[in-house]
Image (cartoon, rainbow, N blue to C red; front, top):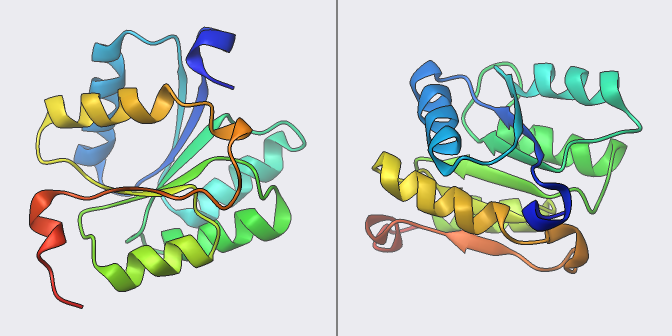
Amino acid sequence: MNLASKGGQSIFLAEDDHDDVYLFNNALGKLELNHQLTVFGNGVELMNGLEGISPALPDIIFIDINMPVKNGLDALKEIREKFSARLPVFLFSTTGDRVTVEQARKLGATGYLSKPKSTRDLEDLLLKVLSVNWQSRSVHDFYVHLQVADLNQKV
């Protein structure tokens, strides 16, 4: 389901950092998209939220990797096992090490996104991601967005 077909999307964000939640919500607001953002503070809250609305699911999920209680990789694994292999799920992190990116791919993430350093870069990234009809793509497609500094990190 893309923006053109629905006029907006139901977006779930699992993020424990209040500043990152504020920046994410602010970036979405600046894009002037007709969206519904629901925020969860960790992976357990996200799973409870998904169970509470199942069988209906959000259009897309963004999950921070480093969260307390249940991290993003564990939440991704549970989403793929309990809910859907096709639901677009993007892992969102400040790091972009190759091992974690590959682990995300193997667990079935739709993509791996480095958190941009500026609000403007976050707006651009969200616009790119939310403009794609991920439901129509192969579950084997994997989108990676890393910051230039992340590409130079050693494994």
